[in-house]
Image (cartoon, rainbow, N blue to C red; front, top):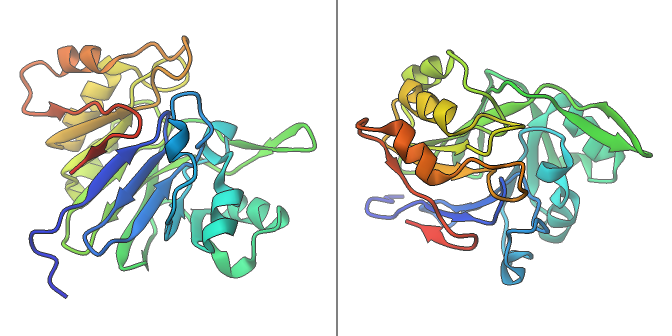
Length: 238
């Protein structure tokens, strides 16, 4: 099928949660925490989700994965340890797709590659934090060969240049909040290493600790040919 002229849209739902619609109409939900303080109430329960991608196990990235996967009957892609936890929490085995960093899968008409990230990961079990596998990011290639990179929670690392060399993403979704992830200065370096044309900032402003701002990112990008596009929660970028 020819998807020429059809665009991928990005809707920021606050914090690190994005709902992406691909040219064929597939809805991909990233790191769902729809009850985050930034997400407008009218967007907290999406009408349609075809696929969920999880980068790691922290609460602010998985809080709503089970309710959303259960409601929509969609598949969830994550690392091996997170897959085990999700199945223990009651998700049917055929909904959970485990993979690991460096691997690629074809799913929902998309090519999904799991990349490295530098962070930590844990899940809560009976009030105790347990190992949640290594954190990751994703490169997604849509039906019309548009590629974008969702970094998850991470610091900047030099192998982002390899991600850029191997997959040539046009757009990167990068955390900029500082404290728990890279801040604006490091995110500007990440965008440069990746060779992207556009950056969508995330993981900022949810709490006072996440103090990085898109304007600081623009200042750090400087004269580089990289467009910083900051969305209001609920806003859609085409």
